[in-house]
Image (tube, rainbow, N blue to C red):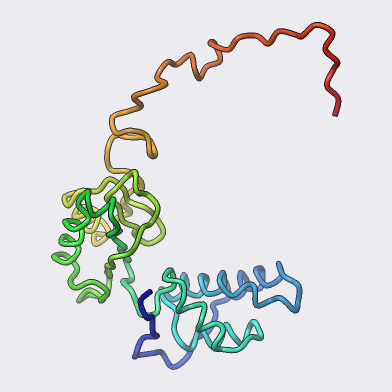
Length: 220
C-alpha cells in the first residue's frame, strides 16, 4: 500500500458551508450521542464534495465536530484512497483503471490520452481544471477499459472516445456516463447471445401450476 500524505500547501482555515453542516448533522443524528464518531467517513465525503479535496484544517474541523482525536480522522482520510489529499481539477478528476483486465484491453492508451491532453498524472493541469490518476480495480472489469470521472463510470472506452469526453468536459458539457459501445449494462456487446427467446420474459412460456391432490392450503 502506498504512503498517503497531506499536501504540502494547505489553506489557512476551513469552514463548513451551511448545506454541508446541515447534512453532517443529519448523519450525526443517525448514531447514539456517544457514537457520533461513526459519521466520520460520510462527513469526510461531504467535505470533499464541498471543497474538491480534504485539507488539514478540514480534518481538524471534523475532529472537533465529532469530538474525536485529530489523529483518528487523519488515519481515516489517509487510509481510504477515495479521499483526495491534494487539490484536484475543478472540472474533472479522471481515474483510469490500470489493473489487469483494463490493461489488457488498452488502458495504457487511455493514460497516454490523459497525459497528452492534461499533463503528468497526479498533478493539476495548467489551467487547474483537470487531474488524472492511475487507480486500482474499480470493479467494472467486464466493460474494460474504463475510467471513473468525478462520480460516474465511463466504460468500454477507446482513446478516441476518452479524448472526446475530455474535450466535452473542457467545453462545459456533461458527457453521458456508462458504456460507449452497443451494449446494455454488462450484457455482451451487440446484444445477448443466449436466452434470446422473448417468451422467456413475457410469461407466455410459463406453464400453469397443477394443484397437488389432497394438498393443504398454505397459511402464513
